Structure formats: structure tokens, C-alpha cells
Length: 493
Image (cartoon, rainbow, N blue to C red; front, side, top):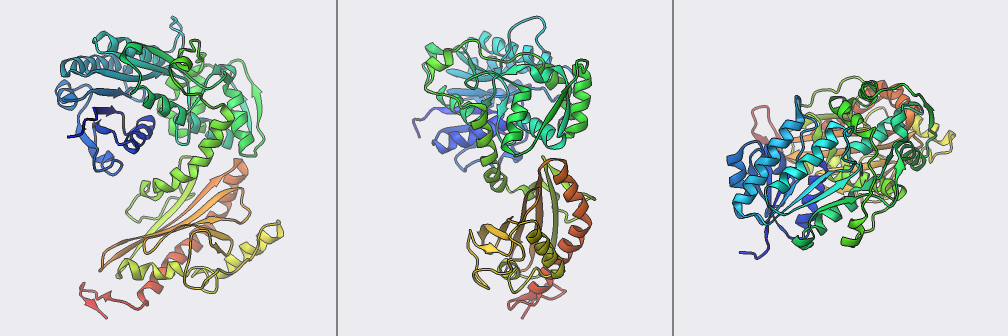
């Protein structure tokens, strides 16, 4: 049995919890995840990580989950819940603190929110502070981090800023955009959560954490626009209340409509670090907003690839709705087809794509796209590939570049033609010796209004070209040398 203390992680399916889970696993820690839906986490954890089903509102499930635990991370909140989230947060914290004390837990590490304890503080931030007090009342030592907004690919605040800037080159801004915050990069936040494991219990208390200096939300949006090479104009208005702002946010960023009002109510309050004790207690020096945004954009593509974005789409193989499926700020066209061949055979036509083979359907449209690219100073109709049958990561493939290559299952291409954004084309093949499924996914990350207009203008052609390409790949696979299936399911040569 390992001497390493057992750590209980709540909120592992959330944004911060998911990043922390990965970091703890990388360090070889003994981890038990506590989740309402364990099946959601099974594909995300290492074989050594345990998952226990339960709910912080269910005291019996908490007792089972906390048995044998030395350290517990409390990363739970109910902001997205309907009804009184404050009452649910209060009850959940009381249940967790009591169960932790009874189980002999040595310490609790909790992530809350910045903000002064005043009568005007938003219900969300008041609840965050109250949860810390309720946990401490249990008698178990609690280290409470209080943070402002988190900057990282996929974080709620960062995606809100991204959506606003990408979709509104001219923005009517309410007063809250001038409110100071002290954003923290997700890497630095995770570093603090990890460092808390080694801090003596005698030093536990409330620590305010954030970037090196306060910055307004308007300046955060300007910084994001600058890193994306976009121009942003803001027209301030004095009368946009939090309620109207939440409606506006829900209209522009529909992903957040459900929690828009609660989020805006928190944004209208200053969330800056007033106590610098964290800089003395921890050997961590958080990066500034420019570095945080740069890290988020750089990590975005790696995370985007690693999380296999096509898995978020329906596996039914139905045609997407007009305009594609929205995935965050990206636009996705994904379709599937089945072929009575094993993956090694089904993947062969995909491996030969481009160059002399062409793109299987409407090659003249691909040539036209390359010619238009040449006219605007792009690489043009660079038809060709280093080898007619073999590919490697980094190879050029007409006006694409091979970004991932895992035969016989996966090929991902990144566009090098001139487009108002970034584009990828990915093929995935799964199956067994009798039947394979080919998933073909095109993704476009638009820059600004023009980028979105570009996608929608070309979408009818995308439907024609992409559906034809997948159909012809299936047909080519059926004519590959190798075993196929008869209509009765028997293998025939």
C-alpha cells in the first residue's frame, strides 16, 4: 500500500477540477474523484484513479467517499442551478465539513472568489465567502483561495470575452467593463492548488490570489483583440443595468444565457487582491494578462486536439443543421459513414488524399479555391505531397499541413490557405475486422464578423464538397484490396 495520502477531489468534471486532476495524476498522487455522474469521468482518469458516485447534498454518499481520505479539495458551487443556489451551497458545505470531520480528514482546500465583504456584494460572491466560513466551522483546517476571473482556454470568463470580441467589433459597453479585476492564468491557479498540499496546516487560512496587477474588463478584451490581430471599438453607455447586461450577454453568447445574470452581478464588483500574503507563503509569481492570453491561445490547439472535439458531436451520423454545429466559438461540420471493411483498409484512401489522388469529389472546386488563394497572396494551388502513399506529421499536403497522423485511425490537417480564421480537416476511423466507421470533421475558428460571414457564405459549397468527399472515400475503401462483407455479414474476398 502506498504511503502517499489519499486525496478526495470534488468538481473533477469542471474546468478547474479537470485541470487539477490531470496535474495530480502527473505527480503520482493517490486520488479519489467524487462525482454525481461517474460515467462522465471514466474516460478522463488514469487507471489508478478511483471514482465514487455521490452528491454533496447526500450525507451518506459523502461518508463513503471520505473514508480513509487525508486531504479534500472542495471545488463545488451551484451557480448554474435553478432556484436558491445560496441555500444549496450552504447545505452542501455543511454536509461536507461535517462528514470530513467525522472521517478524520486532516485538511480541506477550497477555491472561492475575490471581493470585499460588504452589504452590496453580489449573491454569488457572498455565497462563495459563506461556503468558506461554513467549511471552517466544521473544525477541519481549511485553506481558502480567493480568485478573480480565470484566463485559460475553455474557462467561462475567457470564453465570454472571446465571444464578445469575436462577434462585436463595435461594442456598446456598460459601466461594468471599467470595473477592475485581477485575472489569474489557469496554470498559476493550478500551481497554487498543488502548492497547498505542502503548506503546513498551521499556515492555513484565506489567501487572495491573482495576476501581478489589476486590469479592467475593457482592457482584458482589448488585450485579447490585440493577440488575435483584431480591431475593437467600444462605445460606453451609462444605463445598461446588470439585468439588461445579462440579457445582452445571453443574446451575444448563448452558451452562458442560463447563468448570465449571476455572472454579471459578480462582474459589477471589484475583484482585486488586497492582501498579498499569498506571495509570501507560496513560491509562485503569477503571469500578467498578456502572457495569460498567449498561453490560453497556445494551449487551445493542443487541448482542442487532445480532447477529440468530434466526440462532442452526435454519433448518429445525422447531417448537421444548416450553418454547422457550434462548438464554443468554433464552427463544426461533422458527418459519418460506415463501410464493410476493417480500419486498416478503410483508412487507406484517406492516407492517399491530396496530391495526384486529389480530394475524391469536386476536384475542380479545390483547384478554384487554390487559385483564389494565390490571387490574394496565399500559397495557391500547391498540388502535391512528399510521397504519393505515405504521410508524416509536418508534411505539406496541397494547401494543408499534416498536424496529426495515427494510421489506421486518424489524420488531421491544418489549413495553410488564406482564411479569416483557422481551419482544420480531420478523418477518424474506428471499428473492427468486419465494419468501420469513418468520421469526417471540418472545423473553422473564425476571426470577427468577416470570418463568420466567410463560413456561412461557403457553407452550401461545403455541404456539396464534404458530403461528396466522404461518399467517394467510402467507395474507394470498398474497392481496396482486403476482406469485405457480404450483405449477410459473411466475409468474402
